[in-house]
Length: 295
Image 1 (tube, rainbow, N blue to C red):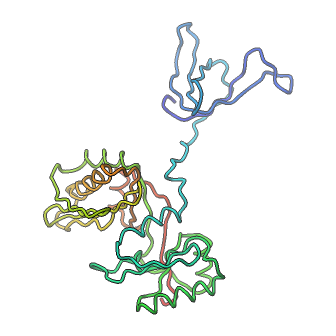
Image 2: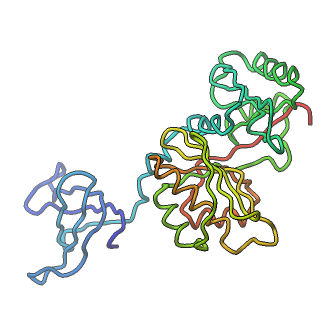
């Protein structure tokens, strides 16, 4: 149990509880020691989140069990706040608020048009009833000759309401939003990379890393969050660590600028990518999908 977060119920020797029996109390923290003390008695030490470590005789323990670690601060960020970081991925992105929703349009996409850059971020309260909100979404995208799309959190109230109103999921549009401690991801990426030196091109809060003509990736800094996107590796060069090498360079660029959290989107059925990101310390924050009234 050493190194594990636990809760331990113990007897307080010599004290009486409300019912007249022995007094008991719970201690929650990391178990830092477990064994035999100098006197020959068994004991453990629990380090709570605040205050001094608590030494407990094993004979005084009534019960104990491991408990999950407290979610990190970054995992407690709301879905809407996390997805707001995507807006800075495209410098020329046109946005228009609709209550807490955001209408997004990329007027001059480079390469293929990304759904994130040409869809309504429909998370939260649009500030009007659903019928009016969907009418405004449709008008916005039809006026720009774009497909009508809404990005929603999978399983949310907005997701359910739009589906009930006749909107349908876009095939192959489900994606996890992954986040990680940038420092941990960088350590893991450096250890697993190839050692090659990729080429870095930067412009304000945006970076492009290229490894010859076989691998590339981009990153965008938004406060202390680093968004990773457009990672590509030529099919004949995959599973050689090139993608991880590109990621290491992007993470290093972000770390130098004060980023502490790294995030990215990855399709839910992209098993190789999910496995790679999990090895680097990324975890699922939430899952999104795209809905359209015109399927």
